[in-house]
Amino acid sequence: MKALLGKVGFRRLWLSHVVSTFGDSITALALLLTAQRLTGSTAAVATTAIAIALPQLLFGLFSGVLVDRWDRRRIMVYSDLVRAGLVLGFIAITSADLMWLLYVIAFIQATVGTLDNPARAAVLPQIVRESSDESQQGAGSNLLAANSFFQSSAIVSGVLGTATAGVVAGLTSTMTALFALDAVTYLVSSTLVAKLVIDKTVRWETGEAANRIWSELRSGLRLVTSSRSLRTVLVGAGVVMLGLGAVNVLMVPFIVDELAVPETWFGLLETAQVSSMVLAGLLVATMGKRLRPGVLLPVGLTGIAVFVAAMSLASNVWHLIGLLFAVGWFVSPTQGAVSAIIQSEVPSVSLGRVSSSLGTVVTTAQVVSMALAGVAAELLGLRTVFVIAGVITLLSAALTYLGQRPSKVLAA
Image (cartoon, rainbow, N blue to C red):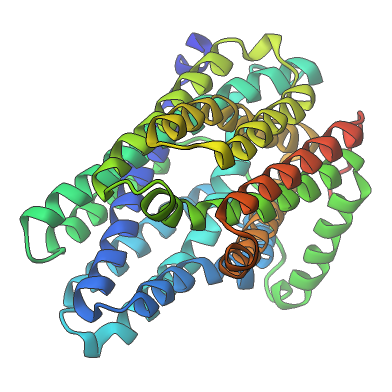
């Protein structure tokens, strides 16, 4: 880990990621609170969440194509600057009549974000690798450590951002300060990434972009399907979110209705899982060179499956706190392993498309799972849905275990 932090480029990218995540978590909660305060409608809150999630489904794959052919450093800088301006637009939304504008700005902001996320994922391996002749196994271990460190830092930053938004919102009647603070985080992030030195991407000739987008998209999808390892990771990620998406939705009624716990406990419950996620991420970052991402992934998914299913047996809040703490130990290593496998398998020139493919698959599965969660809970009961989610996650673990085979793909 010291070697990674010793790299100026890694520190800049990491700090940018931390600052950006802090700001994103502030605005994510501030937007939902704004919708609730102005309308008092759960439908408006849900529509806000959909406006944020929809761009990944609509544009995620195309964004990956552009990331692989545009200057990634400029993408990150410009996306931060554009979003800094957009987030200030939320300040003007002061009545229910202007909710349509909130939806529009949220949609556009999330659309710009579909370019930023795969660009960061594609840049990380270039900065992390110790040398161009590093062995594949060594590169994978180093990437595992880097991704786990990024995940842990993002978790902490996200929790701090959410806590900040909650405190400020509770003390003030408007969200102006929160949106202004998020704009500042984007400006800080853009300043940090502007000084990164990274490899240039292969650019299209002037005038051929319109003809090449579809071609590049098809080649990116062929790249994913040609690698058994990549194909398995994407399928496994989609399958696991079919289960866990429902758990994310049903956790609130489970805590409030089933366990009869007041809302004041949510902070402690979140802290229980986040604390173990951070500890696990730091542990993997420290031991990265001793761990194999292809083995860590199915192990992590198995642990998540067992403890998610066990939540169905929780009879009080303390049982749930213990189970969430246990789950957290497996979440960060699993996320880090997915990123490390993709970044080790895919050439830099194609990383944007593959990262976007992963994001699109995960988001689609999550939305489908959330949509089915309510119906399943009414028909089968909340606890039964948790068991089903555990079984689905265990299926994902089996798929990723059976599908991990050495496979080097060619640049597209």
